[in-house]
Image (cartoon, rainbow, N blue to C red; front, side):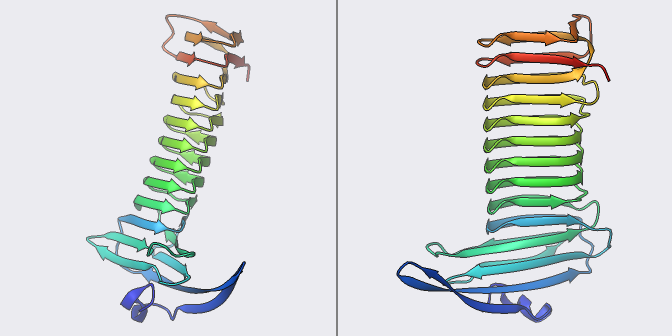
Length: 287
């Protein structure tokens, strides 16, 4: 039985190929198979449990939901399943341990409003124009998202995260690889152990950032109501619209430099920065 099990009889005829991979001292035969399914059922959410292999989600204006799957293996095909239960599309894949090559790639084209949650073990995640809430635990491979909308929650072991153009609250917890954000709105909660945080074009009202190493860099296009940043190593560089804020700044080493920003303890807009090593540079920009 192939990686897609008896689902093959319901799908378009899958493409199955065989090729050889040359390694020093041996030749490994690599098998692959792929299929595409268009679902007519009403889908409200997607549940992922993907062992090895990346996941891509593309936003679509079409009413139907389309799933493309591709598997590659050297000895035993990955076990893959697709089912719909009470409006939830459940996608799973797992590989037999000990293989030189085994992965299962998923690409979903989703209409607006379908939420996605689950686990991606390795291979990472790509989102393009996805409109819906997203909650993923990613072991390795990181995540890249462009032009999305909705509440975004990512727990990433390694590989980091890149978000470019997103509307909605974002919560990110990264072990290594850092976080890079551009042109985002919504409240941000960023927790990074290694790799730092770089964010520009921000229109977020509230930003909470905790960085162990790699530093913190924030550049705002709109006045925030709260910046709360803790940096153990790497320093903090923050640029906001010029004016008066309630400032609470402390730096263990590297000093504090302020330009274009005034301290007003009565202001409701708060900038709090605590840096153990690396110093603070806070600038106000007249725009």
